[in-house]
Length: 109
Length: 113
Image (cartoon, rainbow over all chains, first blue to last red; front, top):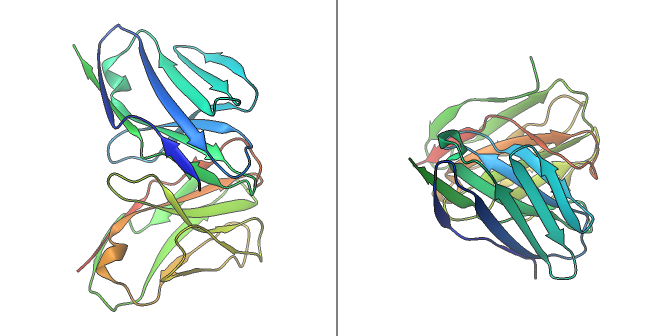
């Protein structure tokens, strides 16, 4: 079956670093996506990994290990506006996205 | 219009009624998608369209239908709404099916009583 696992909720402190993990199991693999979703809003694209390794984009970085079926999103220098849900999704062999339930990130001052 | 829009923003509907959720994009994207999002669950694909004139079933298509008469519009119809269809519905689009980003509309919050 197809499955995406990520923690339900995480708490971190403003200015700190947090790593959100995601494990995936899908029928085929065409990339791993991370989206950010603020409460009551639509998901917005953060990153896409299809090759192993780390992709850095400003304060956000995303890592992929295809052999382990594992990814993480790293957020540095946390700001209060980073409080949101972070959605992990794997694109399967039919180019359809299989989504995790999301990780709610709470930032405390 | 800039990007992707959905209407209505929210709706309360009596069970058994027919309802069409509208989705329009002005980016000339070929691929469009309808998802539902429920608390504690990931986004689930209802229907998709790879290009105008074609549609396909996603993970949870029962009770829903779609059409894709042109590139811009991708309406989702609930023929006879049931309470289990209470959800937030997101429409999304991408330049092509295999593209590495999907762009989401603002969502429609639907309550079926």
